[in-house]
Amino acid sequence: MHRHLTLAENLTAERSQAAARRPSKAAAEAAIRTLIAYAGDDPDREGLKGTPERVARSFDEFYGGYFEDPVAILQRTFEEIEGYDELVLLKDIPFVSHCEHHLAPIIGRAHVGYLPRSRVVGISKLARVVEVYARRMQIQEKMTAQIANTIQQVLDPLGVGVVIEAEHHCMTTRGVNKPGVAMTTSTLLGSFRDNPETRREFQRLIGR
Image 1 (cartoon, rainbow, N blue to C red):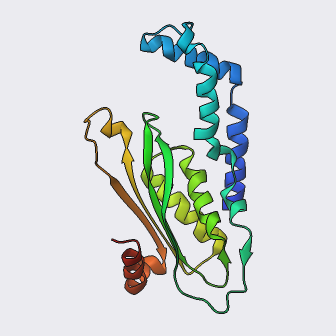
Image 2: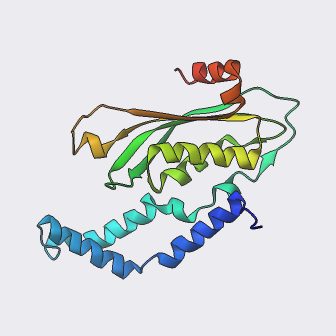
Image 3: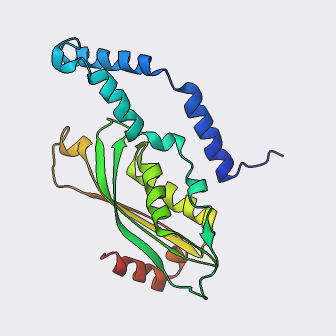
């Protein structure tokens, strides 16, 4: 029988594959020059000469999540919690991601909560996990599930709840052109799914 890979092993393999298929910076800049020409402009004119290099650098920032390890971020936990067993919630975490269909921005906020079993993690680590998955080419539904599943598997809490609210520029600035429309997705695991009281408390605290 084949052994199923752990989350950490899967993520390590994904990072290795991303590094292996990554072209050189020069190749990326050449591709950006081609796109500028495709748009109808001259990549050699003064205002655009430095654009390929700047866009390549912006890609390093926008999509740096492919080369970060969300499991490692959550590894340092604290067990001296004096028996605390109530909801831990970090809400209104701002993020910027990019739609995998058009590379248009997805701008929104995430609410992340969990019910600790025996240990907690520093709250900044929850925000960093959101950031790792946001800095990839994404769809919101997948990103919501990735954040929740990673926290559940690494921290082993009694339950996890993740709600994301975001505006997708692939529909607000192009296509149907409907500005001001926000999309909401949620993933509820463990007690957040099975216990109505826990679910209601989470929804109340995030203002839903």
